[in-house]
Structure formats: C-alpha cells, structure tokens
Image (cartoon, rainbow, N blue to C red; front, top):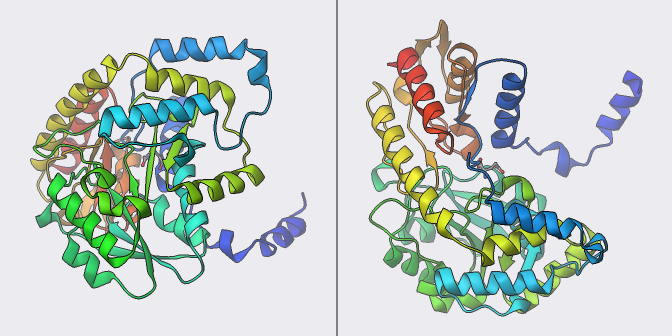
Length: 405
Ligand code: GLU
C-alpha cells in the first residue's frame, strides 16, 4: 500500500481504537520471544504464562476431539452444554458456589470474558472502580465499553490490599461496578476472606456490580486462603460476575478458554453479543477444557508448590537489592517490587528516570525482560512473572543483582 493510502487509513481510525495502548504484557512477551528466536540469551519475566506443559490427558482429549466430525461444525455460541456443566461442577467443587449452566458463558479466554462483561454492563458515563496497581487490560476494556475507569490506589504498607474505606471514598453516583482480583495480578497480594466478605457486603449495600477475577484461585502461598467473593458475601451474588479460565491453573494460555458466571439475564445478553461477534469458542479447545476441569487434578497442587518455592526465591533475591522494596508475594505468580530507589541512577551505562526506562535498560544490558509498572497504573514499580523454570529464574535474578546490586 502506498504511504498516502496508509495515512488515509490512519486518519480513518475510530477514536475508540486510536486511544488504545497495546497490551504491555503481551508486547514485552512477544519481544522477549522474538529476541530468543533470533538467538539472544533473554530471560523472560514478562507474561504470566506457566512454563509447565498442558497435562497429557488434556492434550489427548483434544487429539480425540479433532477426529470427531460433529465438532467440525458450529456449536452453541455461548458454549457447549457439557463444558458449561463441567464449569458448574468445578465451581461447586473448588469454591462451593452453586451454579446452574444458564449462568455460564464460555469465552475465548479470561481476557475476552472480562471484555464481554463490560460490554454487557456499561453505558457511557458509568464509572468502574479498579484498585491499583491493576492488570493492564481492565481500564482499556472499560473504556472500550464506553465506561470510565477509576483507579483506586492501594499502598505497599497495606500489601496492596484495597479496603472498604478507600472504595467508599472513590464511589460517586456514577459508579456502576468494582473490579476485584485476589490473588492479584500484578501485585501478588491476597485478601483475607473476612476482607473479601466486607468488600462484597459494601458493594451489595451500594448497589454495585462486582466483577471478580478468580483466574489465580489455586495459586495462594501466604496465610490467607483463597475466597470467592459471592461465596463469602452471598448478599453480593445477584450483582456479581465471576471470571475464570483454564489458562493459569492448567498451563493452557494458548488454548483460549475462559468463562463467566453471571445472573441468567446478563449471561443471556452476553450470549447474544457473542452470537454476533465470535460465535462458539473453538470446539477442540472446549473439549480440552472439559478434560482439564473434569479429569485428574493432581498437577494443580504440584504446580502450586513449585510456584510457592519460586515466590520465596524471587522475593529473597529482590528484597536484598539496594533501592528495591519487594513485598512477599502471597499468590498468583508475580513479584511487584518498588524500584524508585533505582531511578536517577546509572544502570548498565544508561541513566534511568522511570521504571519504563529501567526495563528498557535491563533488557538491553542484562537481557532480562520485565514489565514496567506504568502498564499497571503504578510507575516506579516493575513486575516479574516467576512462572518460568527454576534455572531461568535463578539466572535472571543473578543478572539483575549483578547490574543493579
Ligand atoms: N494475564 C497475563 C499477564 O498479565 C497474560 C498476558 C495478558 O494477557 O496480559 O501477563
């Protein structure tokens, strides 16, 4: 295409899309993978993507599904009934929440689930409270639905846990919903069940919707166990949407299967939306997800142990660095150190003034890929995913210590 035509196309872009920033987590992951493919010795602390393989029984279920010719055709836009049943059974088993299949929507991963919820719930002007630091895609998805994201800052001193007082201070007559994520991406914080219950009760009294992202439910290493918000705060259940998926628990990031659990009316609206947008999620991936949810679960505990071990190693090494404050990760698979003490310093021959510049310098000189806190509404921080092999983790942390320490 000629340059003139490209410019014309650029001018034609909608305001909605032109204001969108690329997902930093995916961009940095892609960059690290491309550098490795080009022969560079890069350690990728970027994406939250387990290094473990998808379990064998899941892969075999997908192989069998490929040979089933009925699965070569369309299936119901909102998900295959057997997978909805499997999600309902899994939810009752793991969290105690009783769910009917008409409350379940199968989506193209957890990210698409969150997008679809906001499309279904928000009108222009609706405000959505998002505790910060937050996962990079939440505010963009709220904006794409015409809503207004409202960041609610949390403090390192509180372990980045949000409290009812902070939420109430941010609430206005336009507030429609709260996004709640525990275990948290990017901070690794986990809310105590009593605090989850208090937040749920507050939301119910305020008449707010809660979108609770439970994708890290099985990865908890601290003193607080996982708590599902509609279970510990049943009064919030009729305005609550649970988001989950197979990606993290079963090392299935590339298979793209997630789901929502929502009141029947909201689910029906989301199915209608999906019928005009994606149609059904790939049938083979749905078969794989069924096997993951209904088959043996032994790998889940084993992987939790591996991540708990890595959390300890990452925390010990990072907390020992001068100029770095790193709370101990309690869940998910992220460490989120504050690096303000490194700013204004010379890192690998470059003066760095921001966490974004620090990440750039670390990639160029130490060959380690981290995500800058700017992507999570928290400049002055960096995120490291420790969902990589023990050897790579040790190597990457050593490189950081060498250049920073
Ligand atoms: N949720 C993961 C992360 O934060 C995967 C990448 C993404 O979708 O953002 O790294």
